[in-house]
Image 1 (cartoon, helix red, strand yellow):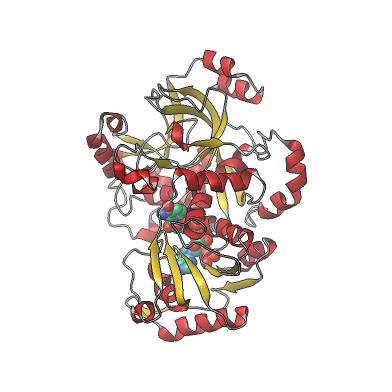
Image 2 (image 1 turned 45 degrees about the vertical axis):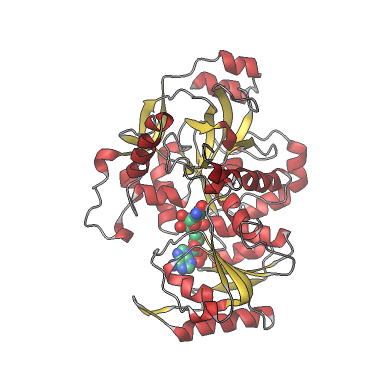
Length: 449
Ligand code: NAP
């Protein structure tokens, strides 16, 4: 690995990378199939992802047709790594087994270990047969949609491919490791003004928020739209706020503490609800939503907006908030959901949906085009990474646990081959032009600042 790292740091040419020997094994953050029962009987909120994650040497896979092997300088923690490492709702080995049964190519992924991670910034080391757009030495980020496109179904929108998988969650050889195996059609140019860990932090959440809000597959946000953003100081939310601003919309940001409120205000948001400080409790008990609380929340939105409701609600907390989201969307408005962090069996009052002609849109990650457009906004300095802290690879357990406990801000990064923060910036001049915004959005984690 030392030779690979030196070549990257020295800015070696493509031929130099071609000549480099590929190590037979590499270090990665893995789950072990033999441990999937380790949390049996433990309540969900007591499951500690750090116990299930191991740093382990694993054999290096060969890139097959259409694939690329990438040296990973940095990666990021996504919530799918939390789910994976607490084996909820199902152990990810079930996905790998299914992939193994689906095709010859999938068989390589069905292993007794699972290398996790759905984001990366790094350098291409090898490409497989049939890859023409990328070559060894290219500095890249990877989006997490793995799709073979062998069925007609996926050719209008890649997310509809029946064999679509989230890389590093439903496939093996993910980004929380020194090397990663991706399809070449996951690769995108690394934003040249960003460090490795900044570049690695945005991909999954930025693309997801882009599809939810901007794309024709999502809510098709327009100028002036009021957009309610749950978790505006978290991963998805901190990019949603930026996309809403860019598109001429008005974000209404929900957060749960004063620091996150400050963070979203520093991003330019003016309408902020601190759900903890304002003591919103949307449920009377586990089964009964509180109509008075959802009404109070709707009134709070009107108070902030001068009497208007939310045109779009960016939903992801799920069970605890979905009833409120349906209620507060304006007549004819849209609730666009991509997740259910607090529980996937939603309960809501359907009268507020049909009588007021609202729509619920299910959304999942993004197709290549959407991910490319979202990455382009980063490359152009129109969306900035919201990284609050980068952990070393051997601190990955701690990093994932901080996200599990909702103690983090914005994104949490992981340095893989990069020995320290701040390396990898290629375009210093462009960075200097945007440095004020870059620093503002990279609000330090108050726990460690
Ligand atoms: P994150 O960084 O943990 O942020 C989530 C935010 O949601 C938190 O900061 C928290 O903010 C808020 N939140 C958590 N529980 C809540 C509750 N019960 N009620 C209200 N707000 C709550 O996670 P993320 O990366 O943004 O991801 C969020 C969810 O989206 C995860 O479940 C993830 O798996 C999912 N996701 C899905 C896709 C997809 O492609 N389908 C892609 C990305 C993410 P406050 O405490 O400050 O309110």
